[in-house]
Image (cartoon, rainbow, N blue to C red; front, side):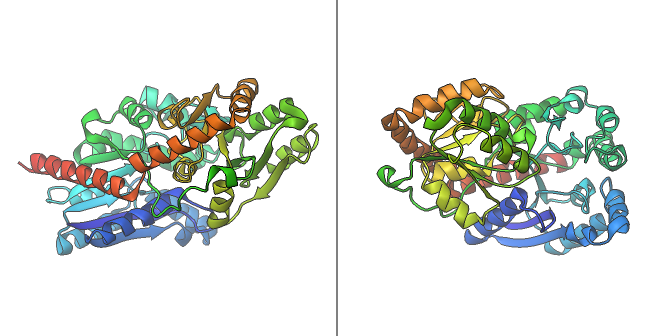
Length: 404
C-alpha cells in the first residue's frame, strides 16, 4: 500500500506525544513493507521569528493555500492509496484535506486531541474540564474566555479555523475516517458534530517494550510521571501523602512544570518529609527504568486526558495504575483488575484506595500480571497494525462510495 503521512511537528524544545506517535506509526508501516511518503512542517519554522512567526502561524491556521497546492502536486504524482494526517496546526491547516477531493486517495485523521472543535485542544478551562464549545457546537465560548494561551487574540485564528471547517463541511466531505484514541473521546467528538460511522478507535501502542521485572526484585515505591501542572492533580496526590503520614511508601515524582516549586514546598512541610522525591524531567530511558522498578503508578488527573502514554508504558512493564475516575481513564484502567479508580480531586478517596492495595502486596502483584496481559492484548505494535489496516480499508471503501 502507498501511504502519505502528513504532520505538523510541534516545537523541538518541548516533548510531544503526538510527534512520537507519528514517528512510531511511520516506522510500523515501513517495517510492514508499505511505501511511505511524507508531507510535514515544523513549528520551529516560526518559533524563532518572533512576531513575524506568530503572524504567519495565525494566518496559516484556518486555511493555508500553499499547503493545499503543494500536497495536491504530491498526490497527483505519487497517487497514494491513503493520506493519513496527524496534526495540521498551525502551518498545514485542515485545508490540506481539500487536496485529495475528487481523487481516489482516501483520507484519515488521527484525533490526538479535540482541536477540530476546541480551541484549547483539550477541553479544559481554569484547571477544570469544560466542554462548552463541543456541547453548543460554537466557538463563541472559546473567544469569550480566550481559551488558547489565555488570550482572546491568540484564540481567534483557531476559532476561525473551527467555524470555517464546520461550515464548509470539511469533516464530513473531505475526511473518510477519523481515529479516536478512546471510546470517551469518540463520544465527545460525536457530540461536537462528527458522524459516529466515520470514527474508529485505535489507542497508542508501545513498540519493543522490555519484559516486566520480577515483582520481588522491584523497589517498594510508587511513581507519578507527567507534567507538574494544576490539571494533573499532583497536589491531590501530595494531600493524600500528607494524610498518610510517616508510614507512607516512597513516592517518585518525575516531570517538571509550573507547579513544581509549590509542590516541593508542600512535600517539605508534611510529616513524611523524605518519602517524596522530585526528579524533574528525565530522559525517556531513565524514566522507563524507574517505572519498571516501581510497584504502582498514580495518575490523579483533574482533566480529560487523551490517551496517556505513561499508562501504555506502565501496562507494558507490568505496573498497575491507580487513576482518577474522569474522562477516558475508566475506559483504560479496569477497576480492580489492571489497577483502580478513585474520585477525581478527592485525596481521601485516593488514600483509601492506594493504602488498601499497598497493604496487600499479593493482590497488587496479581494486578501487575493483569496489566501486562492487557498490554499484550491491546497495545502491542502488531495489534495496532491490524487495527490501522482495518481503518485504512474502511477509509478506502468510504472514498469509493463518495466517488460513485
